[in-house]
Image (cartoon, rainbow, N blue to C red; front, side, top):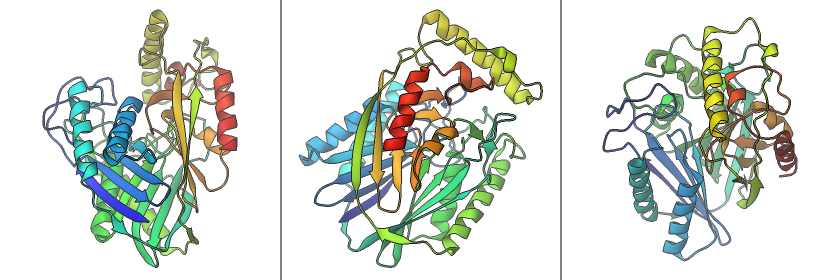
Length: 387
């Protein structure tokens, strides 16, 4: 087995807008904390897995495919499997900016082919998970799933812990929508603390199903001090996981991709179920959602203009845990359809809007952006149950 890890600073060398809130309409250059692509690569005689964890809102499927094809051509190896996922920070460079996307792809290609691999042996992984509201919980009044999780995947060579993957499922939106700087938000803050505490160890991050999870009801404010407060709490819980014994299992690299077709429709939304105890922020976002829905219906297209017709769901079995990579902002209820020791990673291999559970009864901002048919969602549940 060969292993490589690299951190690539992906901050644009020119001004761009942020990406994540509708009010972010002006270009910025100031960066409060660095934005990185954390690249983790494993290679054996059968598989070559390269995972990119970006401090970005999203990374589209076409860019992922272009990067994968470039690397396959460079190494003359069609068994290179590129997996892309994002922390989903709402305060990074705008991935709708063509100039930035070109800059980013050129940078990734150059930096990836210069990665240095080292020979490793007797590799194993250990998986731990716990319920955690350190960062956030359901942002929908009256709708609590209990599916807020913190996970830790530890990678070992013999007894040496050389890599850790942090799993969390909460929107990185502690900061106010109008902060005048770029930021990696709480994932970047927590990773920096871990890197400082364990300088001989590599760290990366994947964002779980967070469509209905945010810091809305747990944060003390929306400035960087509030971000540090919640980040420190998550860091403390990760440290507790490090103190626990975890069962090691031999590392394996079993990868598969499943193409999945989407069908869309504009289902009428019943507003009679709207609760009377909504927060001011919920009322505000519902009003925005109604406006967006009206625009979508008048154009006949979902949120991003062209309906997403097919996605790629990929699964990476590491031995102790299986990671299921999925593009959309999916609600946590779908986690209930995975088996034990399987994690749903969102914002991966592309990006798509919210997917609510079938027959969702609550009126919330997200429901106005979801155009998938009930049949599509039921087929998706079948994939998750059998992946």
